[in-house]
Image (cartoon, rainbow, N blue to C red; front, side):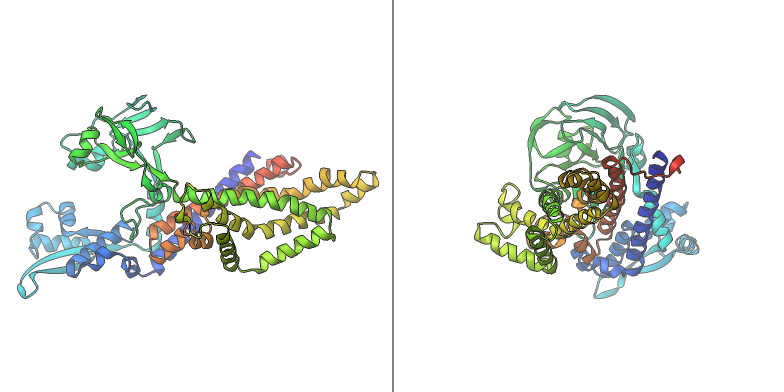
Length: 504
């Protein structure tokens, strides 16, 4: 079993790598870079050389290319910085040639101080090296895992600091009673910490780096957008490292080092760990989709299991015929038609037709979407439960049990149900885990702020980093759910062996 699990994990890692790499190659090679800036208001306000500088800087941040300004090139490849920065000087042209020989494309930019006077102009150069698909994939995977360390601040922000930061780890309890492993010199002050929130032990040492969102929520890490709360900021009374106690939405255990804090930040965080995530009154997009998904999933199984079992147990009778009609009706109805029909019916009973009308704190906001999500999944689950039960009823062991004199009830509950439930159990982990993905149509119709419409919305505006982030999450969860489903089958029925004899 251990060998089997190890092999499955290795295969899962390969599957995730292949899927994400293919998506990366498609996004970065098949979609024109002009699409990236169509929804960017900052780019539309620029023109001339300013627009070119902005464009290449953003494409550098997004992983399309390596962009070098003249300042960057002179600092890196010249011993005479002043002479290098003089346009078209001997040193300037020599450095440009160095980068051209490396495969960089050199662009000469002319900026006029006065558009009406072309004699007054400044000349600048920019160099960019466009990555191919293999380089883009390599850069993504090599930069995906970010490990914090005590030398991070000095290595990253050394030139911006008046003096080096002391590099050390220490274990203790902070001013708010949070206990954990702290660090001075790391990106995060709290490396490992313990609190009363699930899963109770948290860490900031290892993070997945998917880059920042762009053009929507520009500059914000994609994982933060998905996982941070929504609505209004939720302030609590807390004590800060400076000793000041006041109400604030800051979650101090998330604070990163800030190289150039303002006076307001220094007043609360004299150690400069002042870049903190805020708490919000409403759940994150992931949690919102999960709430609806889990609630609808529970409702589906509560209805489908007893109904499907009863249909199989009374095959050909009234309840079976009624169930078949329900299954066919729900399958044949288009999802959008069913959603709007139930939405219209619900309005007669005082149910809101949009989630934001009553918000997160009113139970009425959840009833209609949960019922609709359940009904959309109900017919397929009922049909498969009935089919598995009927198939098992015709198996040879059932005939043998009848010959031994067992009652129909004993045969059904002790034998048929136990065997028929195995394939259903196999799909439960996937159903539970993938609730996180949300439901695009339902969330769109009810304006639910979940993850369901995030992927199509990100594709529409060419938010590449967000598309890759969601692809990675969903691929990982899908692969994990298949493995967990197989393991759960062995728990339900120990006769099932996932590996051959001898552990092969």
